[in-house]
Image (cartoon, rainbow, N blue to C red; front, top):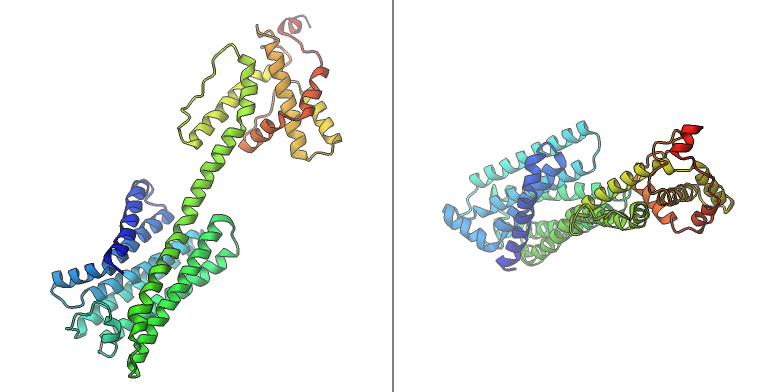
Length: 398
């Protein structure tokens, strides 16, 4: 694999890290955000320093043959720790338990990293090996221990992370489940990578030459596995955000009929949208909900609870679900209020002694139910049977 195949994922990871960095600065105490940013940074470093051009450049600049080996091993070990920490934090269990597990992983893998550096410093590895260092030095004192320690630490992280993700995937649904399954698939590939590396090293210990397992089989497995793992970690984050935006956009559109019906009570006044159509869906939805609530407040004096109960009764007689019964009754009262307001252009009902009111609708899904119920035949069937209303003048003579 050429260096470009390593540098492109690194550039993508660094770009995402930089994009989310302002969020990290504003919310430094968010452990999940810290874990995500840490993983992005370490993963990008893995791709950069594991690239063959970088390996030879680091060896040349430091003047130490094979210095890239412990450097890459340490970064890969840090990546394993970052994955574990992210999974532990992501599960969102007891905060104190999460902090203890995170500290334990950080401490153990920090000791592994320091030990890798110490073993390399004690070893004698004068011949630079860019592709087959693991097998070439498989029988060299201290280098042998460094290689085995790195593979053991990597294998342990792979197994633990795979088990955690698989168990977790059985308890969740949606984007998160898809992401966890992708992570499991990716880590199964890493199991194959570790098996190939161990097989090549063990073969050297027994006098056999299975170097192709390390040089030809393992790297492609790691390369493909990294794609699955990366997709598994970030697909839920991207997917959930996309799903939230799509849900806001869909809710925004579904509230359109309700807002148009309410605005028809004041058709003489222009009613432009409060925000531009290209604004974020969440912002447009917020303003649309506020606009609807403002119109409902203005129509309060015209609400007729008897009309609502009549429509709800008709809906119950049709054996409709309870939430639809409520929506039809509320929609009928809103339509009646709009018609009453249009028939009362001078606002004589406003300020009447007998006030009608509608309990506040807090949830957007409730507004959506009412908006969809506006088209139901029962909403219009009860309009001609509205009881008489009292005006302010009537109230003053009552």
